[in-house]
Amino acid sequence: MFGTVLVANRGEIARRVFRACRQLGLKAIAVYSEADRGAPHVRDADQAVEIGAAPARESYLNAERILEAARQARADAIHPGYGFLSESWRFAEAVQRAGIDFIGPRPEAIRKMGDKIEARRLMSAAGVSVLPGSFDAVDDVARAEAVAREVGYPVILKAAAGGGGIGMARVDKAADLGAAFAAATRRAQAAFGAGDLYVERYVERPRHVEVQVFGDEAGTVVHMHERECSIQRRHQKLIEESPAPGLPAATKEGLTTAAVAGARAIGYSNAGTMEFLVDEGGGFYFLEMNARLQVEHPVTEEVTGLDLVVAQLRAAAGEPLPWRQSEIVQRRAAIECRVYAEDPSKGFLPSPGTVQKLELPSGEGIRIESGVEAGSAVSVHYDPLLLKLVAHGATRAQAIERMTDALDRSVIEGVRTTIPFLRRVVASAAFREGRVHTQMLEQGAFNA
Amino acid sequence: MPEEIKAHITGVVFQIATKPGDRVAAGDAVIVLESMKMEIPVEAPRAGAVKEIKVQEGQTVQEGDVVAVLE
Image 1 (cartoon, each protein chain N blue to C red):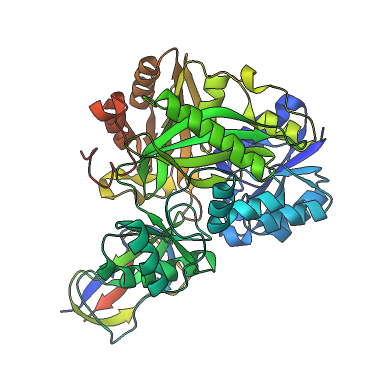
Image 2 (cartoon, rainbow over the protein chains, first blue to last red):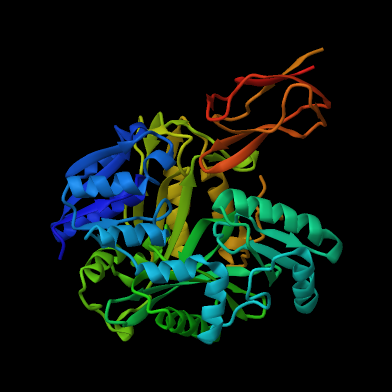
């Protein structure tokens, strides 16, 4: 096992990783930007190194500065958290070249899954069902039109280098393709420095269901069951839960089998998530793989009783997986609500500022993962996630009751948050009955 | 009658989308702010010509700050 671990991240996820380090008796190193000098994650660590100015490019996305900090602190390993450099295969490779262990999959696996077209090809070859569409970058509108005609409208254009919904465009008819293609190319170029697009059939009212996988260096891969993550805005999740309510047994079996087969096919190690769309008939299609720890990993921890971050540290140190598949059992139910500094009454506009007051619930079946405290500045420079509320119970109904209570007892002043919106979703009949899909928000299902 | 265009959120100026003299329609992006990983356009409230841009790329603006003026 390592002696010292540097966490190349901030906010709640940095604090979560530090907790795992403490549990294993490892020395924890924080890095921070000028804007984060007084941040809770800095105080949580045994040692902290300032790495640059507030803009992420100059600090949390600055691989050189982070490596310098790791050398200075004599770190044996770097945990990237999620976001920032977590899915940069170049960063993972640079970490290894510096003689430091990267807590995550091998750079080659990150690269393969980061190229969404290559991921489609590889998963399809591994027998995982993917949506009908192109298996190469479509270079021009004519080529996109040919693919769209073949798979049938509506289609969706996606960026090969994409993720997070950036550079995606739904196209309903051939006449709209030209303009959508140009706009999506421009957005992909601006966001990722690469404008390559691919085409997939668009699924109406799908559920987003994903499977947590975990592999060790020796090539053993297991799954840790599924998470339902359909409540999204701007293609980004707001509420996640496990088990996925009402998921047919055959679909669940198919999903977990496909997820393990797909991960195995690319020699995947450490924690990863295989994301799928599930259509109204129970059919499922590979969407993408997130080659890192997910924001929503706590719901999986609550239903399996496993500590994913401790497992990540152990696996990265070369230890074999401590569990067999049959020992990983999904018990009880867990729900996570993401509390963002955004104003749901204004289309989820960012709401930077200072957290003036913060009162959070506690008690049986409640878990909080917070990156802020009263007095924390919520900067324009970073992701607006403030904290995660996790509720678990013997049944889904009990988890919902606890979440309802937790949301009611949460008081955050100084910035607008997603809490009023989360309350409406959790109180809705559609959510309580598990009748959810990814397009509900844009269709106004939870409007006040 | 000149009209001031104010930022509706706090953010960093990501892009100046227009220049003095440009004609804009109501709803056109005059500048684009970046806040919390999102790009948010500051739109012209009505049609007109841009008289003045009051900010520079990379500058932090507060909610309510004047970013541009329409003729």
